[in-house]
Image (cartoon, rainbow, N blue to C red):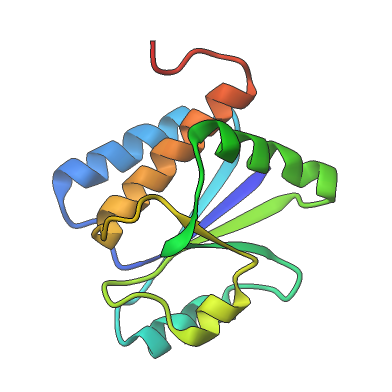
Amino acid sequence: MHLRLIVVGKLREPYLAAAAEDFRRRLRPYHRLEEIEVRAGSPASEADAILRLIAPSDRVWLLERSGTELSSEELAAQVERLPLDGVSQLTLVVAGTYGAAPTLLARANFHWSLSRLTLLHEWARALVLEQLYRAAKIAANEPYHH
């Protein structure tokens, strides 16, 4: 599975950048990962930049506080099921500080919530990488949290 992570802004905090890099490294044996950063701006300008990177046929999951919460096991099952549905690439989008514009909300095939809590988008980015790694371990029947 090819995972594309499109995010607004850069990871500026060294501790978050280190955590994200650790999970990128851990995820490599399981999935191909591509990360694309777009410049922060208004929600509309961010959405325009993100939508230019998404093909009409792409499967897009938008990180959204009001979206569907998944357990780690449910996430693993959802990602594992994608190839069976003919999906070889999953694009995950983390919008900026002010959330996603309506055009981006409308384009997403799935709205995924990490939590009902409001999270900084930098934290969301690191948590997405961690959860994708955890899902890969679960799908491979490998221990992760023991």
